[in-house]
Length: 462
Ligand code: SF4
Image 1 (cartoon, rainbow, N blue to C red):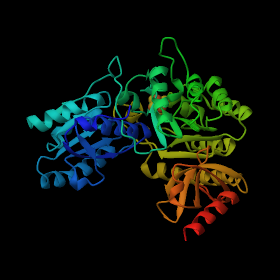
Image 2 (cartoon, helix red, strand yellow):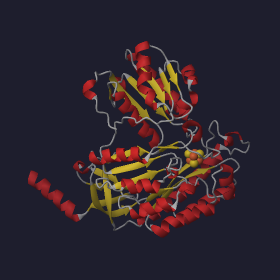
Image 3 (tube, protein in one colour):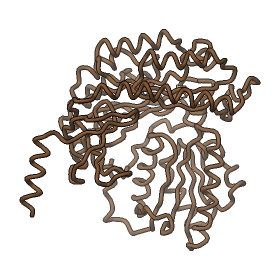
């Protein structure tokens, strides 16, 4: 899957990609870089030196469009200062806006959607060589999904998309509109990619999907995410297998059992519930109630007592009463989530709840959000304190942005850990003893033996 034909290409210029939103978008951006590499574009981190600027957009939050146009306004100045530079916009906002984007920002050269990533090189060549605006948005993914080249941004941790789209129709969510229906890649294709990653020295793969837990139901013969985890578990160099994000209804025992039994599968489950109140869940059309969710958590904790469980929560859904909101707060306490992504409800175009009359005032939504965040933070802190004094395996991601003296990495349960150590440990697995915990991260120290070895190595260099 990695692009390999550099020698045959002549340089077309530099491409700068800015990505908003989820891991799916980040993964798509890596494929855009792979596709453009095949026609001679090399990546740059410097916008001002780019011949092609790509904005990969996200539509999940209100205000996303404004953010896009404000970025584009700034990029226009760069384009004006660099002859021949092109601006392209992809992702969910582009999928929705199509032609309208060119009307609002006529200096944009290319608009492409979420279903025609593979067409990006053709669109770029057309805009560049014919000097005209190009808008192409497909309503569905092609029947035969093409294999896309990729230029990954990490050399030890890789995203692997396994299913696209979502068959649910939650009343607040724009994803089914912009990403379409569920479509799984075949296990053969996915394992080919995992094998290549194992051969290239990758240590971690994360299976991606808007509803990754539904993986495989649409294939013939049908399969499931548990089977996929078991297949990937055979690649010894891959030390960690993860998956995001799922739906509680689809988190079958086959998946939980695979996580328990496959040594490299990480004990981490992100299971969005969105609200802890049955009437709200019904109005959200989530397809499950709070009790069903409790049973999913029980099934996980029965099998894997130390698994980390995280969730997504929306507050201030139209018509949500104070008591219904408090049911969500109570559920956070009861389940004792490791952490939660929280958000105030924001009405999105093409979604039913955006037109309901009982919208809550912004002030009320944000007051509820602040309260919920306090509770989530207390609960996360409690969960994190369980790690005090324990030694955990950490995959080192690199220097901490806040403090370059420190390294940062993640446990198998996806906890962020900061500790002191040399940058050379980036991409390796190390044992770290946890010495303190706050709601968002753990602090620790490299285990004695490794620390001693490093000190010895430093001394012998002097
Ligand atoms: S399951 Fe998730 S992606 Fe699908 S419609 Fe509901 S919120 Fe959106």
